Image 1: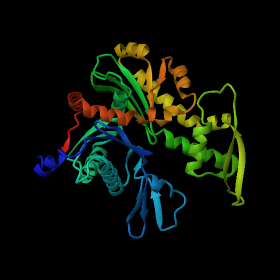
Image 2: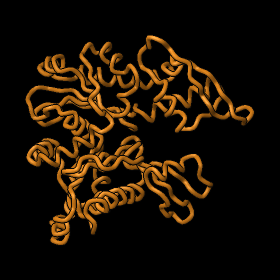
Image 3: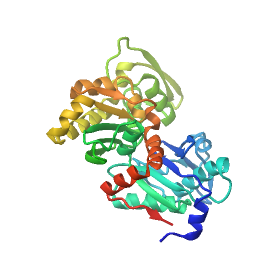
Image 4: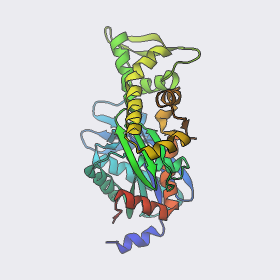
Length: 353
């Protein structure tokens, strides 16, 4: 049932599209574009349970907090692991947006991107968190669909398109046609798993302890999935596990590529399995249109070439891949009829407050 007060307040609120990511949360305000891009990190006092910082301020605390404070992500592998922290984080981001553009008590309409493999319990957790954060109505949009819309693919056409969205917690692979997902797969091999693989490599082969931020920086600077024309040497800086003292190790991009191979192999395998299970009529479309890659993980050097070699399909990285999902959520708000058709095909109902 629609709450009359929420409906009234909604007239003074902005519709919002949200990419609630494991690593970052992005917010798209209808008519204004992407206005917020913050880390999905919350700092909590372990004794009082009080939220001390959210977003960029909280991320700066990672690895630097006293024992009484923990700075952590409330989402893991694309789904909510800490409900209360997620609700407060959403509330903070919604309030931040409305303080800029529409001061007052916000009651926005939300479109939130979720993993394609999310269970009903996980979907309910997102709906409840959005409702608790002040949403008057919430739509859930599967991330591959949102990414396809954000990449300016015509998802309502009968021709099939394939999207590979490599985020922080999960890689989402989907074949889309006629406003619905024909085949999909979700695997927990993505950006975070790449960071973990680098940390494990440094520990096993160099007896070196790396932090999460250091591993992410190495991934961005030297991570590859395909041989480079000229391989490079990079420095790993961390703590020697034997002496406890600072240690510097030089490694090649070949070694980093080997360290990442378990993750990149899993992504390739998931894409190939999805192709093998796709109806033959749509395979012809995919051969013509190719595979579109989105998400931060798609920026790993050479991953598009490796995927093209393995599948023999053309592979493209969309423009500004980090923002494809939130861009799609925002565009879905602009095209209400398209959003309703997609919701109908997914069987996902909006939640009113």
